Each structure stands twice: as C-alpha cells, then as structure tokens.
Length: 368
Image 1 (spheres, rainbow, N blue to C red):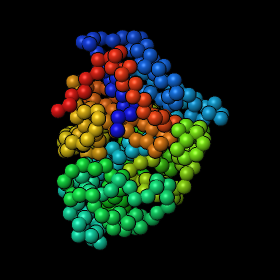
Image 2 (tube, rainbow, N blue to C red):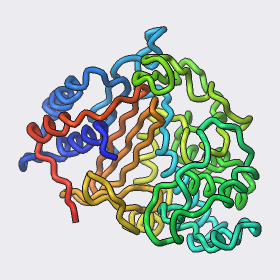
Image 3 (cartoon, rainbow, N blue to C red):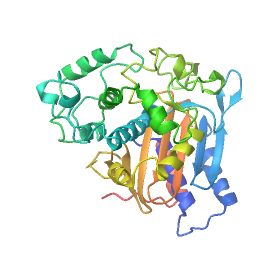
C-alpha cells in the first residue's frame, strides 16, 4: 500500500541524491527543502532521520512522544517499528544459515514432524519471501496464545495457494520463522537477535523486554484516527499491552512489535553495510525472488525485504504499522543512503501529497 509516509521517503531520497541533474545540494539547502516537505505535514508526529555511513544529514522530531507530559521526540525515542521486525527476523535466519543451523531450502517437515501433508514441503525461503501460502494472520496482535497452540492453529489453516505459486503477505509465516530460530538455536527469539544482531550492531535499546527499558523514552501510541475508540486516545506504550513473560505472544512475535529508536536504526544500517552478514548472504538478501502487486511500481520480494527499482539502483524497503504506530525504513543498496521515519500517531492517506511532491521534485520510480 502506498502511504503518505512512503511518498515522503521517496521524495527525500531524491532530494539527497539530487534531482533534475543537481548532485551537489548543500546541507543547508537540503535541510530547507526537507523542512518544506515536513512543514506541509503539520499533523505528523514522530521522527525523521536521514544519512549515510559518515553523516546524519537530517534528524528531527515533530510533536510529542508523550503528549500529556510534553516529552518531545528525538533520535533516542523508542518506537514500535511494526513489521520492520520482519527484516530483523530475516537477518536472524541468515545468521542461523551462516552458523550451519539451517538451510534456506529446509522444509517445515524438518522442524515440525507433525506438520500436515499440504504444508510439509514449505521451505524457509518461501516463508521469507511471502510465497508459502499461509494466510496473513490467525489472531489479533495482543491475543494470548502459546507457541504450541499457535503452530497447531497455523498448520490447521487452509493454504491460500500452493507453496511457491505466488506472493501473499503473511505475518503467520514470519512468526513460524521466529519459532524455527528458537528451535535450532535453543535461545528465545529475542535472545538470539540480541546476541547475533543487536549487540554486534551496538543497538543497545532494541528488543522486546531484555534491554530493561526506562519507560520515559518509549513513545505512547495515540489513536488519532479513532480506530480503537475515541480519536486522540492515548493507548499507552507497546510494552504495556498484554504480553507474555518474554515479550509479545506469537500472533506478533517474529513478525512485528520490536521496539527501537532512530539511533538503533542508524547503528543497524552501519552494521548491515559492513560485516554483520557475509557478502554472499547480502546477495541473497537483495535478490528479486518474485514481484508483488504494489502501486509504487516495481516492488519485488527479497529475503524479508521489499526491493524497489529506482534510477539510482535498487533500494531495500519495509514499513510497518498497527493503526497507531507507523515506521518506514529504506536504504539504497549500493549507494550510501538511508531514510528512517517513525510515528506514534497513524494518519490516513492523503492523495494530494503525491501531487504536491511530484510538482516540487523530480521523482523517478522504474516500473519494469
């Protein structure tokens, strides 16, 4: 789905890399032009952070992480990043593969002998690329459900299509990947991420529960659209919702709900651009496995990422939201650039934003 956040991201990417042939935009002009876009988004609540391996070009907060106590956003504010959790699950699976614990072509039958006949040949790669046939979800994010029950219900659900036949987004598939990580590593999902992804990347506040958060830096979620009650209701912090003793229940764990800051994302970007995973793993991560229907143009599925064609090369992209929190993370794979934004107050699409941005900027998405 093309949201106004995606449009802001795309526009900012081309501001930084240059538009209309101008590849030498000064920092002052860049800041001014991004500010112009963001000033048109008067109701945006959150952070926008843009940079490369050497510099943060733009880092600003808008509005309040805690409106009642007037606590403003900054790059250290922790957000629920929603489905951007999926790229972290994919990196964890890659680490499992590099450690010799799994192979991308391993099937569900290897890990779950009780899996039904129609699902036994589903591969890890199919789970990663949303081509397994599993449905999107079988329950609400905060519904209590044990691991065993989640697996039983998932396996009992009819597949949407034959595995590998096509693309269909699935939260269930990524929660199953989270269970596979726990099975082969003998660690909890969060413990594995912390050891092999967060700590090597110096992401000191990323996780579900392990970092022992100071709640003052976790953004409250505000239901400005009135999806869950009265518009503007403070729904509290994500880790104040019904969670198990080791984080969310399995309708959410592995597919969403990780907490982290813009600063954590910066550290992750630096790490993944350097040596968090092997070069051969990066090539697999960014391979276009199948195309999905998306109104942005040529969006393909890599291993846990969306891969977007631009005239500056391929971009890895993923967003996430639950109707309250929203986050978007995009980076150019060969060029050195990342863009991250996060909000604690989801907004409806505004179609006229695309028109305004297209008038102001030269934005090219290659559709092939």
